[in-house]
Image (cartoon, rainbow, N blue to C red; front, side, top):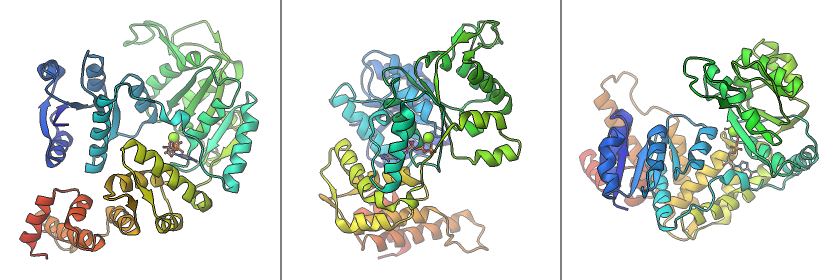
Length: 438
Ligand SMILES: Nc1ncnc2c1ncn2[C@@H]1O[C@H](COP(=O)(O)OP(=O)(O)OP(=O)(O)O)[C@@H](O)[C@H]1O
Ligand SMILES: [Mg+2]
């Protein structure tokens, strides 16, 4: 791949991304609007396009366009899925780091070589990995509840696999052949969330120029997954409760009710009982949702699953990045002994980094240490003198500190240190000279 087309407003984030791609030795062309980018697209002189969601979608509709990577401002699973289903080739999250960008570009470029992307909804056929007692118990509960239509409330910390569990319930239910529709209740402001969920009729409010089918109707006979239900505004909670009680929805601005048959699965990382106490969540809705509570335990309560998960993710990412790498037993042991504040997602990200950064066929403890040290280094423990207010001086001192640490964990290997520092090898050599570090 040679040339990246950066599309979107010329702001700080875009300039940072420009630099980042530059540093990878790729050419960048930038355009603020689709119109100005048309020529590049028409001449097919760019190999991949990166753009914010709306623009990315517009490019994706163009005929014969190159692979498109959408840049999201905030994590939003529902939005990511929508984008991927609309033909976007990959999605990255801001703030972007060099590894994330190279992974996405690599991805997008491989899409071009092997046309149709094999599977866009990866989560839907990710198996639930882990055979410790906690996961076995969870699996048994999933099987039992799947057979019925009861409402399920899934709780668990971030990254524990709540969405995966929701999909598994649907997939093992008699509704498996019907739709699974997911929405993140935290991602939309109240009026939008309301019309997403329930739909609206034309003219219901100023922007309603067309009728809109809500997700409840779209999910009819299937399952609706209400993610981050704890973030739903109180007024909507009342409407949702009515829908659940009556098995019918009324679109915004409509008088008639449509009967629906939808299985509801909700998830939250909040303590909803405490929210009920505090008056932030309707008690009656809580009971209505909490018919079957499913708790997904954090990874620290099931360390026995870590080895299996680590090996599974290694295989998956090795395949995705077309690398042949394995973990040594020591690495698996070390991973199992770590605490994972971000749970399975955290472990998954770490493994992906390891796979991408591995130079030979084995991922060993030196590389693991390097990667985890960087992770720790990202949580600020300031090496900068408290009394130092000059940004210039403070930055220099921080830089020197990071460079020393990177060289430490890579045992002086400058190529690897540069990777960890996310700067080019050349830039590192320059800085070493400048700071007199040897
Ligand atoms: N048991 C598991 N086996 C395999 N992959 C898993 C497992 N649990 C989680 N994952 C993976 O970890 C990532 C996070 O899972 P998921 O999105 O379901 O978590 P979540 O609880 O919904 O997180 P959040 O609260 O942040 O939305 C996904 O990529 C998922 O595939
Ligand atoms: Mg989730």
